[in-house]
Amino acid sequence: MKVLLINNDGGGFADYIEVATGTTVAQLFEQRMADANATDYLIRVNRQPCPPDQTLEDGDRISITPTKIEGAKS
Image 1 (cartoon, rainbow, N blue to C red):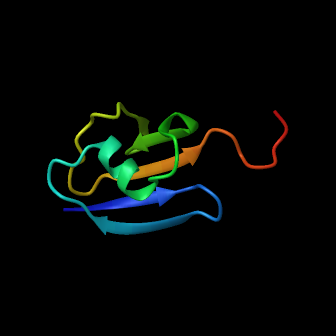
Image 2: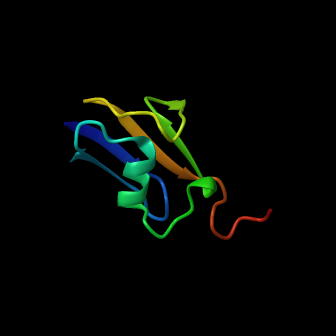
Image 3: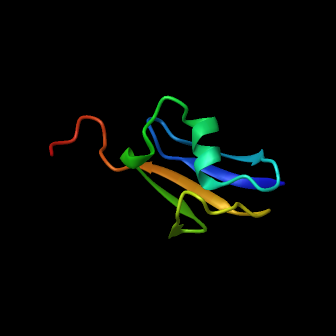
């Protein structure tokens, strides 16, 4: 099935990607952001915060946004 992945990390990108039926948000994050810690990101599906075990559906829009922007003062 096809979903829109929007990655706002670094330079950012957006692209339609194919994922297997039954893929969860956590599985997609692990596949695409293997070296990153999910707790450092806000992950939304169709503009809504979601649990890691949420199963993706055809046409979903997934955005991955870092909670701390590199170089920003904390």
